[in-house]
Length: 426
Image (cartoon, rainbow, N blue to C red; front, side):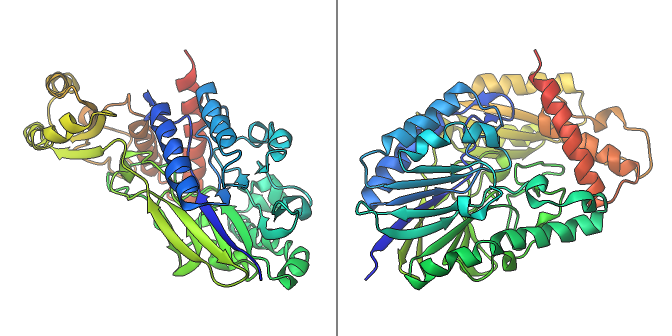
């Protein structure tokens, strides 16, 4: 009889994130990782940890983030967690993630920053202390174009979309022949993935132009990839990239773990969680969602200055009772006044509510007319905020009749890369 195996599925930590480009969150990440180890892994008897990508927020994370990562992995040694499998996401740098892979494998930590040319290299056989296999993991990271071998077909938008779907499905099918002997033994088989699957629900982007970290990762085409790309070989598919924890398309065994802490105001209402998945041979696994404690409340307050002031007053107790971490509040100010006048008024509110950090976004009074080159002065708002700059660029593209989803996504991606590079320069 095969043993029962308890797996922890998590993803999208985004260690090293600088919230809206202003505040590092190392203390929050540290507290989360301590909770994950002590309250979930140890207390729940987790034997295998699977991380489905986006360990870090940027390709070259700060040293504080890498220290958190390695300290956490080393702290699992001699615990009940015998194996760790980590795959890269679209935010991770494959070389950076793989740099310590050989050393970590000596500690039963298996890292796959990018897909190997040989599927057998990404087929991880987990063994017990008697060297007997008890689980198989097909470790599939975020698949970049060069790993999908799309070639010149990527020059055509429609063909590019179809080629991506076909190539991803083919990548998972490559494992089929390799899995036959393990299926015969009745071992549970898991696949990972870091991509956007059709039917997945994303964060609340209710504010016009809000840009989240959950954008489709292949020029807007991965929203068309269905669950059929995974085939029928896997008892569980551990997904990353979407920050909202959920099962996909009604399939209990195909799951996004979601991000453990809200990474943007658009995620403020989400209940963050990690997933405990129990396996017994090749039977359907049972999945338990474990809620992550809220460390820092995120609020969004919209309206006139008077309305916002009233809402802040109503929530002042929440600010005062939050002792560990300052609350963050996004103020969506609808105003006809000048930016300078509004900033002075917000400054008074900031001084009054010292327990909170307030972010000001001035909502535009109107959207530019299609085909118009003119933006009224009041149409511009707080261009020190990254998401507002991206929104203005998007509206400019639309004013030039750039309506193709693929072209717009490509232009936004290029603009964002340039903007990020310029923002990081002193």
